[in-house]
Image (cartoon, rainbow, N blue to C red; front, side, top):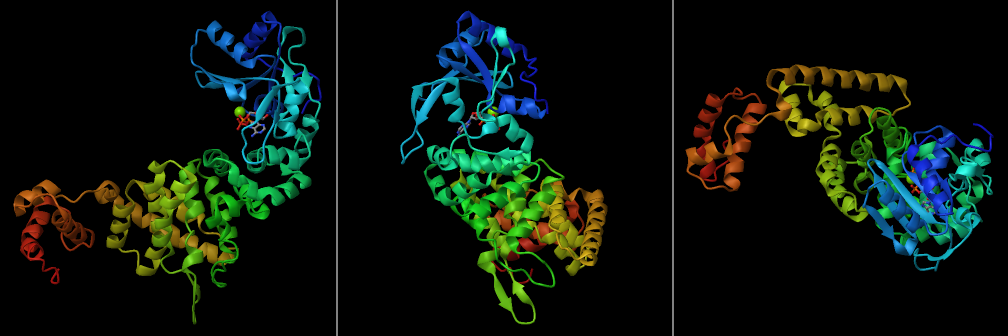
Amino acid sequence: MSRKNHIEIDDGIVKRIGRRADEERLRAFVVGGYVRDLLLGRRVKDIDIVVVGDGIALGKKVATEVGRSNVVVYEKFGTAMLQLDDVKIEFVGARRESYTKSSRKPTVQKGTLEDDLSRRDFTINAIAASINKDDFGAIVDPLGGRKDLEEKILRTPLEPRATFDDDPLRILRAFRFAAQLHFAVDPSALQAAREMADRLKIVSQERISDEFLKIIASPKPSVGLMLMQETGVMKVVFPEIAQLAGVDQRRDYHHKDVFLHTLKVVDNISEVTDNVWLRIAALLHDIAKPRTKAFKEGMGWTFHGHEEIGARMVKPIFRRLKLPLDHVKYVEKLVRLHLRPMALVDEGVTDSAVRRLLFEAGEEIDDLMTLCRADITSKNQKLVDQVRRNYDTVVAKMAEVEEKDRWRAWQPPVRGDEIMKVCGLQPGPLVGKLKDAITDAILDGRIPNEHGAALEYLLSIKDEILRGDESKL
Ligand code: ATP
Ligand code: MG
């Protein structure tokens, strides 16, 4: 990294904002993530501008100049946000902040650039660079952010307790940046995080979940998750995950406690997918192990039913964390089915068992197999090889069975409306029962996957089912 006192900025819009600031006789700077990522050579997305003076007014003028009217003003925070296509530009007037104990709503006063930099979360986010013409690109770094960038360390501008006390979300942000950038957290900040973890309770769930999802989306999520666990932050924001620690697995099978195993599965899956919800499914796959744990003589520890109970925990967790509910069904399905591919090996990898899994997993079958593969974490290489061979057997059999009938998108050849017509039924649970009976017969291979055979089968069973006599099926 260069130790020059200037940075290269070639964004047209930044120059334009600088010109505008010149005209208004205001000192303006780029700051925050923009400067940090430029110095790190990372891809820069959003632009953070700090103005000594009225940031909102400058934001509005720039918007008018570029012909936009979509400035969003947050009077209370003294900020204005302008969305230019996919770039977000945030304008803020340099300020000093003070907070009260019970809330994170700050009282804002005008301040100098230095005041503004020291109320930020980390020194690496508190480097400014001028965008006025006379010293365009000149770096202002009173807190030593550049040195910390080089040393890859997250340090707070003020004493860590003061920085965290003003806004406890910063504790979680430290772990998020540690995971994203692979930086260490300064030991005194870590200690303050331990002491103040409980203070995260006053922070809104939306802000917490935003940062948490960024940890999950980072290249190696275990870095952030481990910091959360070690400092007690996990217990406050995600107790179900915290409780996975110390739940022993069977000695002859898994070698790690469920928490460490889960972290490994999340890291494994993150190497092959950027899908955050698949990563979340990995995080939650064993979530019910603590509550299903039992010792069976001759078997060791068992976790009977943890996949089904775990699946039922997904929705309440999503609700509490205010995560988007449209991903609940997907995550539920993956948690519910995560043992099935490997269980096939014990049951015998028969056509009918594979058909059934393809049908139940549907379009999620590939993601399920990705999860299943990531779930292999033993240190015993012989065992790993064995499990991988089993996995490959299942995958090969799936490809073969899938090719014939496309089971993942399959529907039984006799549909609901035909069932109603043939049996003289109104919509209701009986229709579903008849459809399930046909589905089972085809998946089991008792009748061929054809309309004629399915209809014939329907006619042969309908009277018994309609009479409520299902015992002979
Ligand atoms: P990202 O790459 O995720 O956008 P960022 O550093 O730009 O990272 P933002 O949340 O966009 O993070 O915030 C922009 C800047 O505003 C930060 O770099 C930091 O200087 C400051 N900032 C944001 N949130 C806080 C906070 N909670 N406390 C103090 N400063 C903050
Ligand atoms: Mg940003």
